Length: 469
Image (cartoon, rainbow, N blue to C red; front, side):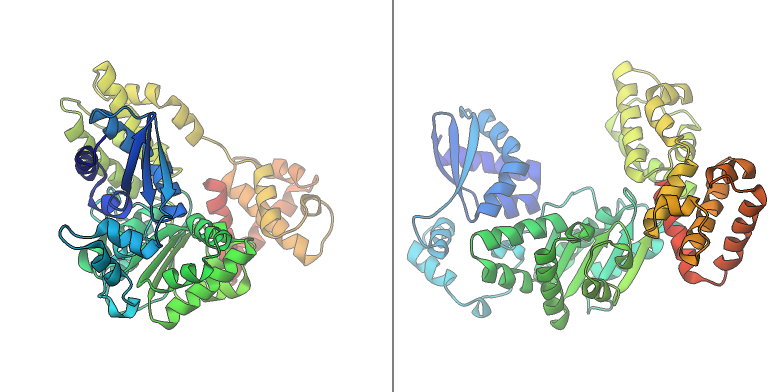
């Protein structure tokens, strides 16, 4: 295989992966050789090579084979023959410019170099962004309108007005969609900004890699040089002491420089178990926005938006009236399940050549519909409440009347009455054989406290969300 072939393959990858992914992950690859079915490339860092291998090796290999190369697998190695700066400069030197000149330019101190997007620095690379996740494709409804508005404000790239922006909510409610949308919009509006988007797991991976390779100062400099830091699913660093320590110092350094931070998680900062109190405190000093579970109108809007896309993709398919309304009513778990159901329905109808009717939807999506009909049990409620208040299940059901047991017990009784079809006597039997009047008293007590005790109201909202997820 020649460099000319690799140049052709690069052109195909640009078309298929999009400019952002190409510039970030493909352009820095340097073709070394093809021998015994192994295509070898040099990469700037081990992290970079591992990421490309996990996420893009199949596409690269497929395009190499399409170009006539006999490739069984790919290998990525860090170029070590020359100093890293000079090696990178020589590999990227413009045509007609000596490598030594490019290396000299690369050795110019960071402060003397012009501002440039994230692709300027071989280490400063965001995780790939999904081209589908933009503000244009985000369906706005009452449960997510505040989160959408806050994300829009950050994406304008103006002066920092709230820092950090903390988005939280259950699975499939749109947190990651909004994070990607912010990054896309910032790259479009303010290409000079250094925007770094990654998951908390990737932050931890880079930190461990830097420790292993004794490059911790490079790691610190890289993360403190960004203009916008976006970390998805921050709950995954809870309990990881060293990673939390570094995240805390990175957070402080960026806030001190008035740089924007955007964080997402599956729950509010104060509810993330094993997250250090000082990090919780820092996260709570910005704007915290909850993405609520979807309502019927929002689910229907999402389905209509998705169905319009599929109508263009599957020409000739007819969608009978009432199907989208049926799905919006029956599938209430999360948006991913909802969209996945519609994807399956259109694909199935296309394969069998039938109109998408209510009967077809019920047959094709029987398993999803059954799962969506899952009933909440009293035992599940008791277990969740006991976990939330950190008490033993036996103490909740048992006879102890201490307040730290009695209040969670009453909350569990209230939720059992509201979320299950069980009668008061049956609920009483599940709570250690208590009389139905005791259950009635517990339910009334919680209903009275809800209007005056804001913490109790928040606890109930969280528990309901966890049980209904």
